[in-house]
Image (cartoon, rainbow, N blue to C red; front, side, top):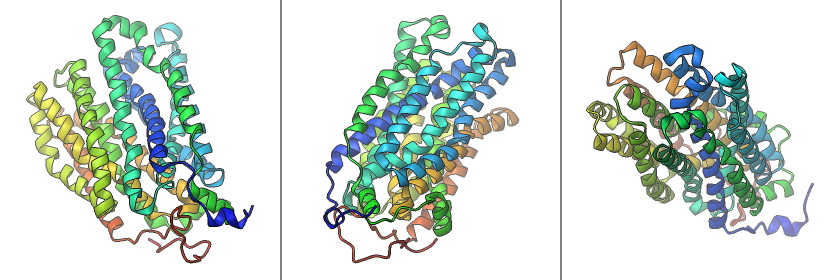
Length: 453
């Protein structure tokens, strides 16, 4: 397994860092598109089409539960694909994750509804959602690493932010598609057959994503880990043995970035339509405007993280979100379109700070030989919590009579947890980089993992 000295001594990247980062972002965008298509779809169509006998409220709960199912299995997918990423390579693993996601999403588009086949469609929907969740478990960590491990240390925080563009891009594409559909198709035709179109589009998008990921090289960092014989037999176990505190910090740091997307793009759309009287089209337009703004702010926050540190940017985003949470939801009750747009913008920018810098924060917490497992598992656990946010917020809304402040409780709690975790991350020294593609460190110990948390 040991490579010739020339390989170890010259781990220069064979793919430019910028090209790799953007290729990673495109792949993440397509994965996000697949996932957000279901998020938008679930808010309006999953209940009536697949869970009709449960009634309006029961169908809504079932729809949000199908979202949660995918998040429940994400830690399993993270452990599986994290192991593959640390043993077989970042690039190979990302080809698997995008393939599973694309095929599962496409198959949702051909499922029979309850009216056509009874509960069969609902059962198959749950199975495909499990496949999507397993895929997502290994996607995020790999997309961050494929970008950062091709970059120099001083630019890694910025390049860690580029794959984060995938979430707003996926949200914009899926929302724009539904906006177009609502303009050209009557609601009854969308419910009858039009809802299948976004899912079937996943198949040609899958071909694009596979091509882009096939065209990039394995990271120089992983190549050096292999050349030096430093791969762990069980990276998942080594992660918990060496850096358990860092895992807890990483999970807490991810809660706001993930949870705010789940709250704003899934629950708030359903809440705005059913309780506040907004039209589906207005909600999607407002969401799209917020997503477009993120295309500008995410790279800017990434550049800022390169200057001041990723953990500090995550902390500032959490603090800002905490301060504006309740005023934002109070104003939303006036139910005007400008206020709705302002809510999506303001309620998106501040959590976006925490989201943009998250990859850089996590990258600094873990050594290269189990980094894929660590990033994937930490993120997946936080995402599992995030998957229950629409369900929990519905329950709080029912208990409070849908008082204006009920979503604010959830967002404020997420902000507090992320603020505390990012403060702890800022007080830790970054893990020394062993497999740096642009530096030659002075003979580190093979299993040096940095300061234990």
